Length: 270
Ligand code: NAP
Image (cartoon, rainbow, N blue to C red; front, side, top):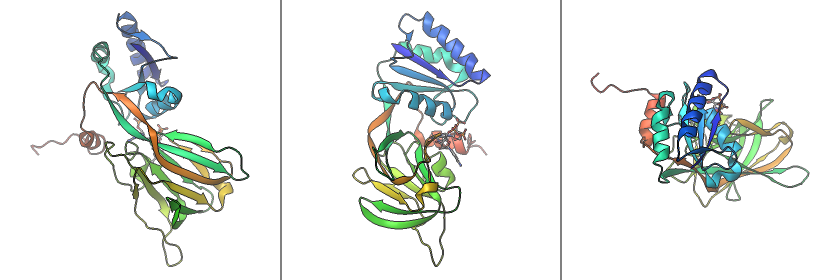
């Protein structure tokens, strides 16, 4: 089986990546292939896994990801830095087991025409303004839903719902649900300006279109990257037909993953 190792530049990750590479090279069943892998192993944290996903985005339908975390939060990562041998053993006995999660399609139309930009997010995309309030019309399935005024809007996937979305008060969604979520970033709500004020969960047959008004100051992000600071006419979001696949050699129940990451180990004897 062909394996790529995608590591961050930290010392701890480097040690793990080197040891992993040696073990893979020593295995008869596995080989390193950074160009055409079947499995991509990310070594670092969620930030590294996001970068790995975007690096291999063009072949994302043909790969499965595995995450080893080296001292980060590691919400997406199933393996610890001291479990390299167990992981290699699991890779040698791989029988294609996987779990897939929804992704977010982003279509950006620029003012002045030209071809639309198409993007794919694993966590979320935000449309926001750091200089003055963002004013934008929000459409759901081509129907005007509200006029937003505030810092911005965050549209997230279920697996990204524990990231930025959580910080801005969005709900956490189990990634077995095929949905996307729109959450507000510091909306202005008073007698003059009004938004719904709560997160929205969007169904698979729906889409969201955001039309910024003072659009020359709007910034569009996709996961850890700024996609565009160019003048945006509209952004359309919908659940992608594509999904991300993780090689699932061990199963951590989603809500246990959430409680481990955000609450910590619970001692039932206390
Ligand atoms: P970063 O600022 O270095 O890290 C952001 C934190 O979010 C890290 O602790 C990261 O985990 C964690 N994280 C990433 N994806 C997650 C997920 N799906 N569930 C739970 N936690 C998650 O930024 P980065 O490493 O470049 O990552 C970009 C992501 O950061 C964005 O997609 C966005 O979701 C998040 N972000 C959050 C805020 C906020 O909460 N206010 C603001 C900006 C961006 P690791 O430590 O394992 O890397």
